Length: 501
Ligand SMILES: Cc1cc2nc3c(=O)[nH]c(=O)nc-3n(C[C@H](O)[C@H](O)[C@H](O)COP(=O)(O)OP(=O)(O)OC[C@H]3O[C@@H](n4cnc5c(N)ncnc54)[C@H](O)[C@@H]3O)c2cc1C
Ligand code: FES
Image (cartoon, rainbow, N blue to C red):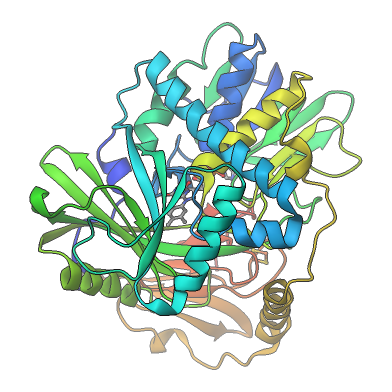
């Protein structure tokens, strides 16, 4: 099939061992059950265990192999362009709380790395958002002004160490980058023992809040006083977070370049089409990571083009010796730009969630873990109200309205769209929607010619899935659930596989 360059795996995963925790084998009881072992869940588990709680971390796949194992891992409060918009839409006080809480998350990571001497390639770096042409310069200038007003370490610069000219950039000093998986694997190792547990390959299918919460998994039941659901997008539908966010998929390549050419600092562009740039040390020297190509999950079939575009960009801007890695992942973007952190619904007393990190979850996931731990420990957190997960949801932004209309049209339109092709129309290496005896079938023909046929109807809320050629997966355009070509769940909100045909 593809002639794409690089190993098809995240560098963070390729360069670290797997954790190998057992699946749940007996029903048990803890103070707090934490569903999902990414940065949000592991941060919460770490803080709660430190405070003397017993915790059980329950992971359906493997520790830190989700979005947190596929990120770019910049640790910064400079979230491309955010502060001018936050001040405009939410006011200066709330924007300041956003700034402070993200800075606090950055410093929490820095302190944890120092205190626990975590070997995770953590380094202080400046963070830049740049405009390549004068078109976006006004936005950069506004961002500098807004950030300075909020007390952030911002300056306007005309030059960077990128090997191409820019029109201007906002620079934040004393930010950081790290190897997210090395950091998280260190933290998770400290959880088991003294009544606390970590389980992998244990899928939570339901959370019930009674006097004691019941966490129902495919391997047994865990009882807990409190439950934290940090599955990137909650697997519990009650809070409707799948409708308060949209799933954005994005692509990364790892390119080998000469060290003398490596830019210093972390970068992200602006405008319609932008790229994210940073380097990471690796065993052979330095890897340049370039990210971009973001789109709503399930709306692009030929995703191989996204990798080719990144490779072209890298080769046109840097002296690339080789492309060593390529991978992609997705995150949920909140319509009002603020993550949702707190109670699942206004009626929930003991079930908490965190989502909507908008591709900035290294700090936002960390601050979520901090807020949720504080909630359970009854400690006041100055940022808790801002991110309250039960706040009124503004569907008022033009983007939010457009998004919901698009979801609606996929939902209804796809159900009635005629699918006239049959299995024999599916070529080797290709995935197609076909009809078999009147049923909508998602069919993939592998390199040996074997057909893998599963139902095309997403078990979450019934939308029709779409083929993703770069990842060989079936992706749901409605709320971002993803499935392997054999129908196994890769990403929520669904907890069920596509039905086998
Ligand atoms: C391309 C890209 C680049 C990014 N780069 C950056 C960056 O440079 N800096 C930054 O700050 N942020 C970045 N982000 C965002 C950041 O990586 C994410 O916001 C963050 O990793 C999300 O963490 P999480 O804990 O919510 O999710 P995850 O890390 O996905 O963790 C959730 C876990 O829950 C598990 N799970 C799901 N369902 C179940 C179930 N039913 N039962 C049990 N477990 C379950 C999953 O397997 C997964 O391990 C980027 C995002 C993308 C898409
Ligand atoms: S993810 Fe909601 S319908 Fe598929």
